[in-house]
Length: 392
Image (cartoon, rainbow, N blue to C red; front, side):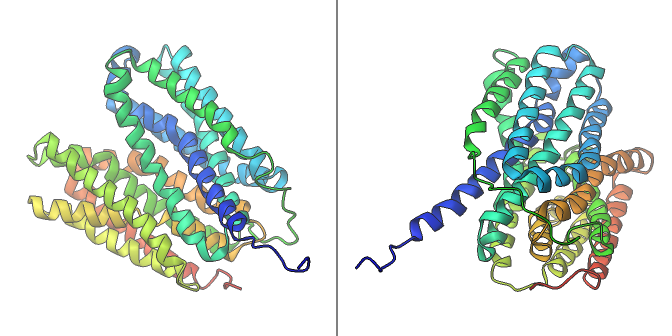
């Protein structure tokens, strides 16, 4: 009887589930500052004196710093381990949130503090990617990455809830205080030894290979187009005569489809062997069709365009992280830092480039330009499949 091994299933199941939950918490906490600023922009504008264009600059700085910090963050994860860097990301986010509540007395100060928060985002994304890569079985990683990326829209939901519950009752600064407290409370969720020791890189896997760089460039174009849709679709819908409430509901619909698609596509990825980058290209083509429909008149093309362009055209980040981790298992943080740089760069330059185009030539021209960018991104993804390694 002593030689009979005891069942280990509960432990084996619990660890991946806990790791996935930790990755979701880290992701939400580290992206909360920028979405909280977006959700509370109306109240903050009255006190700090910035325009909608100023809000766009804050978001661009946030993602721009995230792009610059991604590769160094990946190196830190490979050197010190995911647990240490995840806790650092949460701590930086908490400090930035509290600093906004206490010290943001002018617009330039707000921009500087959001730049600091951008570092937290990079730290959180790369550490959570590595947590999933190290402690979730490969057969379930697709779903785990999909759920993690679907957690990002949850931050938008939390920011929206903060408006009536805190900003309109006790003031927007207390919303940032509450978020900072929640971030500190999340620190114990990262287990002391949950990430294990730093993983030694035995080869230069995960470096800036031509395939990864090409995927990163494609991600820049695709993320820029998708972020522009999320930024401008409500204003564009109102400009075409849609009621503001219905315009907001249209974006909500697209966001809901996006969340469901990120999870569903991750679930389906676990039932495939390879070919994930090709699937991303297909999603981008679908998104491009949706963006082109936004240039047409009428509520029908608008709704279908938002569902396809935002719901499906922005559903691929989790699948991209999963594919890159699967192809570079020895250095997941270093590899995803290359492609994540592209996502952040797109979040920075997309609205900055397409916004002036909409002002000069109108929203239909902007949607067509965004659609073209997504099509180019799809072509680059297909080209990258020839340069990336194969799944072993």
